[in-house]
Image (cartoon, rainbow, N blue to C red; front, side, top):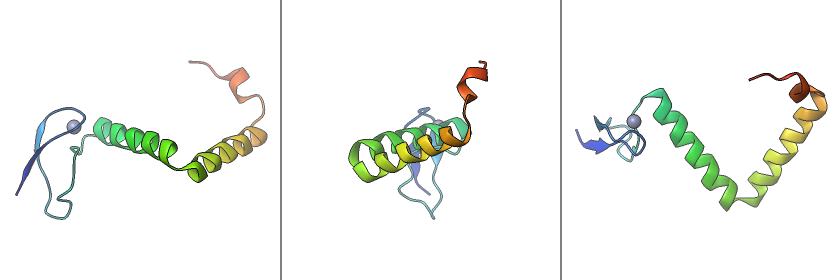
Length: 73
Ligand SMILES: [Zn+2]
């Protein structure tokens, strides 16, 4: 089985034969990072996806008015 260096945390991990193109380890924070980078690239590359995300966020806001007024960190 092949070893890879995780593109997020830099740990050396053994990849599963089912996913030989794997670039990240299975740690939740690395999966989150992988998703974040994928989403970033997708937003840059795909105008339809961007428009869709914007529409979905606007629709959500229409359903949840005042959410950010009551939001606390
Ligand atoms: Zn990792």
